[in-house]
Length: 322
Image (tube, rainbow, N blue to C red; front, side, top):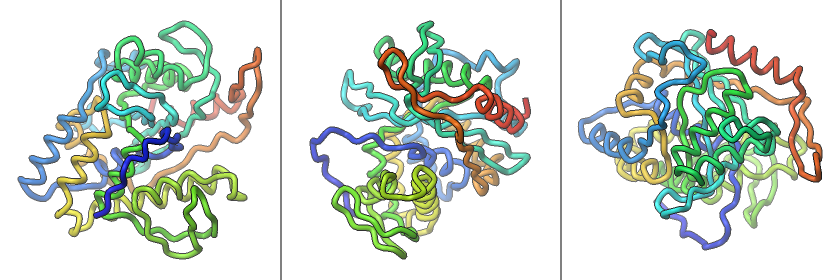
């Protein structure tokens, strides 16, 4: 297994779906021996960082996994390190996942970081990714996550039940821990000095990040990038679930423990794996089709029209069965 060295350069902003790996490994993975179980327990203990609220104000009762209640997760990709004191980072990618075990599906909405909306805990209108930064500055990463949860659920008018914050630079360690991934590439391109030929390509952590970042050379734009990101996620799940990865479970759990924070407890993750694993097989991307950039008072924002936002809200509510 090859491990990438930190270059010391300013961390790049990793787009969209990086973080889904944690949830999908929980949904799709299994635990095979006491040793693996014990190591997973330790890793989840390191990841666990609860928020102050017990449940969303938009729910009468807390989600019950044993009853197979549909639930939602906000995934936040940050450029900060959890191991550096005072470095809370910024949320440069925000993804909402809704999980419905009855329909055996997951819906995924990527929210552009510059989306203009109300920051509810601050009482101002701003870019949506500022919610995490404002909360973190006030009370640390978990408060930043809670501010982001409150802001996103206010915009989408749905409960946000859980969060997972992922240090994007550390995602390389997760890819490396499973021994790298193999994907089928349908576009010949070079990005960040790395050439990706058409056909089957093997990616370590550094190459996986570059492979997933590229957008402007792809005629499909964001859609093409999303396809590549999905290929990487599926590759991580496939490698993580293979028998050969059992020998690397310490590296995998160590990478997760160092780079992920979540308010999901170990017991809740076990319940998700037991009751929701079939949902991981069907991931549906919700695309924002009519949003566009606009300058207001000299500041760039991404504006989602009310009509489309209403459609997105209805889709997510239906999937959550609310």
